[in-house]
Image (tube, rainbow, N blue to C red):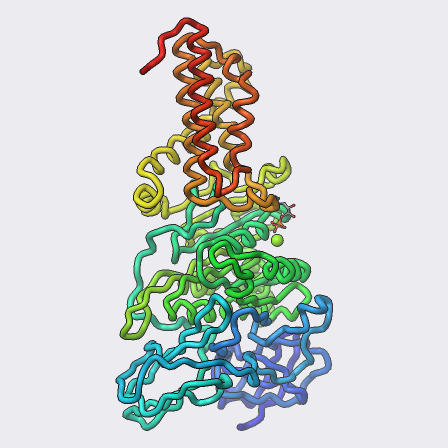
Length: 593
Ligand code: ADP
Ligand code: MG
């Protein structure tokens, strides 16, 4: 391979000449140490290279060699429970010493462990015809993840040999006779990070990804295979939302990309996830999680690559027919890396200095989420649900990254500084957040949870919206100007906010609420409303209803009822009926049968 020479170094950007043999997106080795970089622009024989490591110590005249290959991700057993940097170098040391300089410069490391043996169980026999995506066998990667070994893209033929037993990821486990000769299949395959992995057919997302977070599941659900953005100012709760969705979302695989945020947040993930028991399997959450970390203290260029590395891994597990969720925290830090490189390339700056291609690069990421029929004769269906945090400066979402994101994703969980300040968590603003999956998820919920799910959800949301206009009246002319019925509405809306929407991520029981419990809780609050309205009509005063402190407290505390004791919520509903009936009787009213 011919050698180019550096003519300029500007932070993570290196320009080299004599590179006419190389192509855009080639990985290159820069300087005597062979720092890893990627060509991001070619002009005649000049290559602009983003270098994924600190460029101190290299300078003009130093050699640059192209590998002739794009940034590729190793896909195979060993991904789960691993932590990688933005270009998939393993960060084992990170777990032990969060403040260590993780990797020595320019040292070529394999992403997947080359020594470890995996037990391969073939599921096909010699003579069977196979094509890309067909599963030839499986590896039990962790207690909960059955890793399916698939025929790589571009291979079609007849199995000539297939083995069984313990193998390293690079050992041949199967030989396929193709038109272009014999192909040796290993447990591992490679895929270029910046290219979406092909599927047979895209499908429309339908059912929700259940997160156990009430404000999300009930009001702003994300479909399995959908994409959601969580914009919010510093401290509003973006990271907690992402952690909660990663922990509790009902997907089989989690890819968590920590992108440009503080290192201690990744340490939190590393400390918490292994401790957390997956509700479905009883196993540690790490047994189905892949971590990608490019925290603020790590080289900026690798941050740009990290989200593509993450989504490539997500696609690989989707191809096995799994439901996958991918979190990116934060895409704003990613965009800043993009902006920095663009600035150094002296490109024409767009809005607020971001390059004009910001939106299309974001789309390149989010559009790889979705629901699809995977390659292979089996016709497996897999999903990728993508959740991206956005941290607009000052929380003002009119800035370019928020705006570009909102043009792509269908769900917006707008975090609100004022709510966070009042310690209303999750601080998702119910008045400006939205989900464009509302209707399809409603249909699903009405069928799978309860037929009046969407009716309850709509009634509750209408109350919350009415509350804000009623509050305006109250602030102008005082509470006495309101009718008793409107005062009741205010109280019920408050109950929805405090007893239902507020959910403590750090409370053992409150941290997760099943759909069935969400339904029962919401129904209880709205049942109280119905009964209280009946009482008002029978001449009971609003204050008599508001004074039912003990009963109202029970409603408020229903969030702490464990999943195993949900009938207690029915018990509270029975108490509501009895107590209100009593009030009506005192007024000499007639009870409805
Ligand atoms: P951000 O990532 O937006 O800067 P964090 O997710 O780190 O904000 O949240 C900041 C703090 O807010 C957390 O440390 C926690 O104390 C509080 N918080 C956020 N969400 C919740 C929640 N659902 N329950 C309880 N506390 C929360
Ligand atoms: Mg954060």
